[in-house]
Length: 126
Image (cartoon, rainbow, N blue to C red; front, side, top):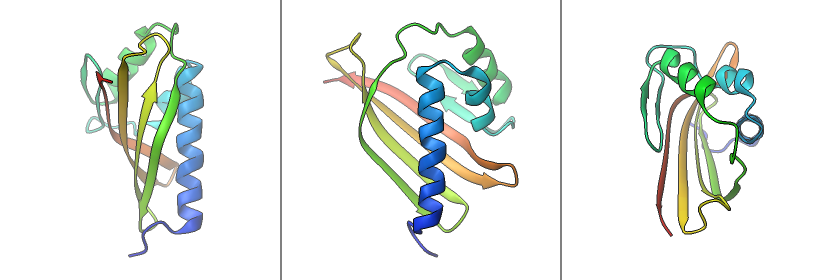
């Protein structure tokens, strides 16, 4: 198995950037499209545990679009083979200067493209 194949990593990095842009612009259709539409997809958030794409959709559609801007740091994307990857990053928001956000995503390549199948977002004191 090849770890961090250049071409595969570039694909996941592009998907990760598309997700980040959609997140900060509250582009809900793109956010929904980048998560695997499956009842086994999981997203643990700062204040919610979401099991299945229906729960993730409901959360995204109800979320306020205010204050989503953030700065990323220490982003590490690692690919394993051609169809599996992880993306880890820290993030910082001006609205919470004493907090450090942590985000992890598990990406899998499906016939329709790269999709998040599991994600975790949390905040800790800085």
